[in-house]
Amino acid sequence: MGSIKKRILSGMRPTGRLHLGNYVGALENWVKLQESAASATAAEVFENFHLIADYHVLTTDLDTSAIYANTIEMVIDWLGAGIRPEVSPIFRQSQIKEHAELFLIFSMLITKERLERNPTLKDQVRDLSMGETIGYGHLGYPVLQAADILIYKGEVVPVGEDQLPHVEITREIARKFNTTYGPVFPEPEGRLTQFARLTGLDGQAQMSKSRGNGILLSDPPPEITAKMRKAVTDPQKIRRGDPGRPDICTVFTYHRKFNPTEETEIRAGCESGQLGCVDCKMRCASRIAEFLAPMREKRLYYEAHVDEVKDILNEGEKRARHEAQKTMADVHNAMKLGEV
Ligand code: TRP
Image (cartoon, rainbow, N blue to C red):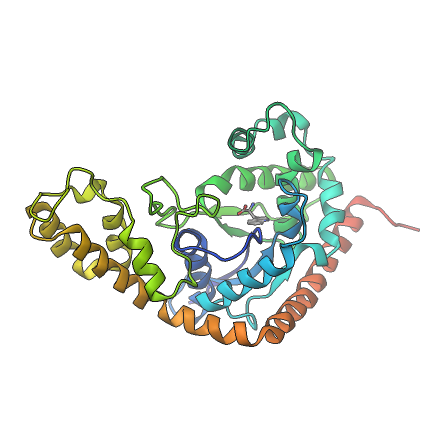
């Protein structure tokens, strides 16, 4: 049976080391899609392109001093999680200047009112208490993201829920371009992961870097244990013997994801009161540590071989640039720009 090959484009802003929420919400899915080619029965196989959105960092933070170090940390996490750069190029947005060129053209194809209606932007403006002001580049965040995706003719965009509005804007821009100048771009499809978000250790809806309520992929086992000790559980379960409610317990959500074979037993133990929270947390911490062990090992290797990480970026950037240049030639042709 022939399978259809699709180009994946996904990325993250380089803000430093990744936590389990980043893994579960995106990275795990990237790796799964990357490995689809190995399955003989897959109806679709994918070719992954992974972007480091360093320009996007500037939309909310003008301080660029940490971007490089954060980029290296993030790439090491990607490699640790199983991204294979020889098949899935990894590259920085800022090093492929065609992104900026396509962003300029796309900015002509969408209205300011449409961008102001973007719910992800509204949430961000509220969270950052930015009042009524917003940078011109920040308003254009999804336009740059559309250029990121479409310059590689990305067809599938595996992202978390909050990014779906951006994928929708990407589709609108692709459609507008295609009807105005001719068919150059696919209309990409956003794909959510099954576990779109992971609860924070503090019981907040989401692990987030700024809240510091997550377990990092790079955390050594004692750190995982220490963090887990402080994790929020059912407030009504005060001592062992008290019956607990797993369905409102943060630690139980981690058991479901990282310890599925013991899920039933843990639930029963919690509900009957036979299992105390400390034991439950320690079992969870050791499962997570086991889960992360192979990633940590790969991570340690790359930490000791940063030159290899730099080569990986270099190679990825060459490959990405080549693709981006091909697309820009199509764009210029369709728009009849540069004819002599
Ligand atoms: N906006 C994405 C985030 O914050 C990062 C990103 C930039 C991205 N360009 C992209 C994601 C292109 C997918 C495709 O997570």
